[in-house]
Image 1 (cartoon, rainbow, N blue to C red):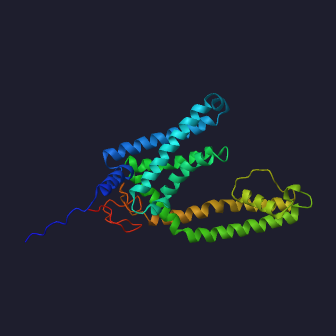
Image 2 (cartoon, helix red, strand yellow):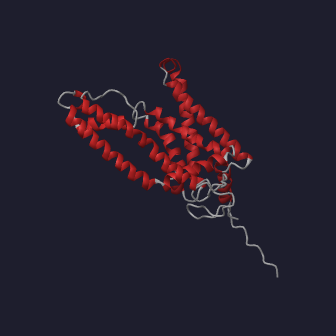
Image 3 (cartoon, rainbow, N blue to C red):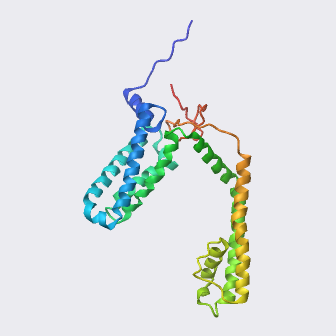
Length: 283
């Protein structure tokens, strides 16, 4: 006998949440693309408004109008953030994810500005939300390249940590030596921490020039620090490049978002979420 398909036990609430998830999180549907496009426009407008408001002339002339526009976008993003939490089965998972934290930080500055004046300029954090443009416009190759870079950095993290410990040891030694040599006659090296600051600036080839040794021995050590500065740049780059070459296998990501935790960046052929294990397309 043919097997009878199981009955659909979804309620109207479940159907509404699934539809909302499809519009807010997915970019493969016309509704999802239009929503994400509108979201990107609002993000750009809100960031531009903050920049314009920082100009004294526009703040004095159009301050009230800019404030109203700022609150309009903040309320919109607040409602959108609530809906994002509503659409996933585990809101905490999404709230603690990268985009979840960015979404929250993008709306907090306006509310905090009610108690601390000036904090609304931190709204520029919303610019990080523009990273979704790669997913919205189907630029998955950029997502793949970004994933490869992150994987290379994770794989080389222990080597980088060892190298950073070595660099910190070198700048500490150089700073202490310069303090001993320069402090009696050079006011710039009046403490070991300040001397270490000079060593870091010199070793990283930044060279502000606010502090400089005047003794012959001090200048000799400065020359050594300048030469070592090339290694500071070359060694980490070489380590990460090696790991990047090892991870050249190609992966194909899609805009599929997990309905459970909201995690994005799954493979096109993925069935379960790589973060929480929930099925991506529940029947």
